Image 1 (tube, rainbow, N blue to C red):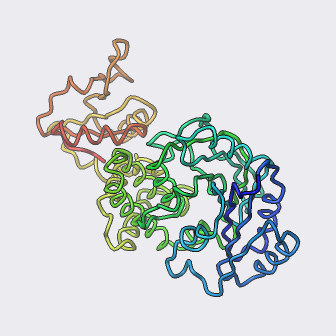
Image 2 (spheres, one colour):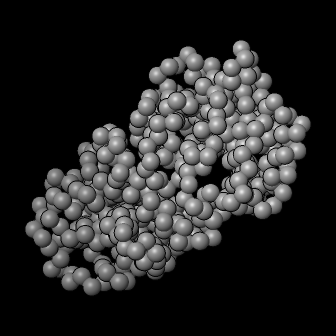
Image 3 (tube, rainbow, N blue to C red):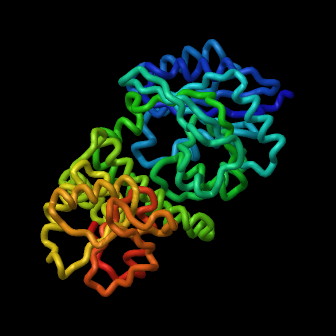
Length: 414
């Protein structure tokens, strides 16, 4: 076989300390088909280009270089689509950025065989190890995702874990038809578009290493500049709104969780040690201002769902909200019967506040009381507009809030 079967596309920018690992991972691949290594350097200012030239000199038949004299990314250009893909000769394209690397010598061979025997698959991904530069630790990226087709919900919101760029292997002719819709990240745009062209497949094998927050990476920039974080949320929402039209609404039901995940990412990075109610609300107000109030409704929904995760949530609620209730005139219920509900009951006891009972979605016959309070199913409580319901649960909180807001006619204590 003389025709190029796979084109490896590697994008680099100021990755002098990482690029050798990436190139060595490419060159070690063992295949029964020809492949090429196409490296695009976006006008690096360190020694990346010199390393690339040295590797090309030693491997002239394998490595082709695209060396830019001015940075294209800063001009808003899609590097993969506009600068690298047009030069690819392979039937398939494998992508790996310059700060990641492959650790399995048959990665290309096994992904090639999968695609050849599964013509319905437009692209496939695999698992990876995550390397933390700061701690010098490795961990498995995806813990519980069996090999097989990727569901629509995981195309939009990776509930089982995200799919690393260095694991992507797709059909080049499909990639060339990608529409010009601006996404928060190139990974998101490619994954969602390829899902419209065929099935996506996941192989639960760790065949690459992803460097988390490596120098000059997008993740590093995200963690240093809150405006980049705010823009990420806006771009995510705007992309899905436009993509929804392109995909004829196929993925609409999954967008909400992607929006919540975009905001949650901000708090995971900037409040990694936790946050108080005051810090939580301050962070959300920051996001609103930095996003020019374009996604306020999303941020408000995030507030209602995630404020309970604040370290002083129960203490704050008792002090600033529940103490103002007119005992005897207003009835208070807790929604939930798990650990969070127990925390709420304990807080009420400390505050000398009375509780009418607990509400659950479905009540079992064996669970009529909890800590001496009656337990009601949602259908057993008749609301008259004077009742307050305090949702005290984390899992399923979105659905509970929706039910309480739309159908129950009660007052919510959020």
